[in-house]
Amino acid sequence: MSEFAARIDARLYEPKDKHAKIFETFEALKNGEKMELINDHDPKPLYYQMSAERPGQFEWEYLEKGPEVWRVSIKKLV
Image 1 (cartoon, rainbow, N blue to C red):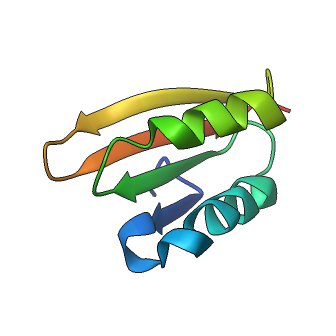
Image 2: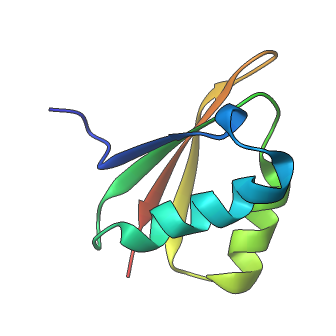
């Protein structure tokens, strides 16, 4: 069994749809569950957006930091 309840590969989505799909996936998580985000660049703008819109509601951990693939574990806290 994977440690992730969901996995989203942001490389598969149009730029205009990426954040909405990621937030939708995050919202579907239960408290304490994690999702894996895979991207082709550092998703730091997403981190800032989540920090502003969901303060204290998640933990962010880089699993891989490029240069071609970034992987992040995002854990839902509440």
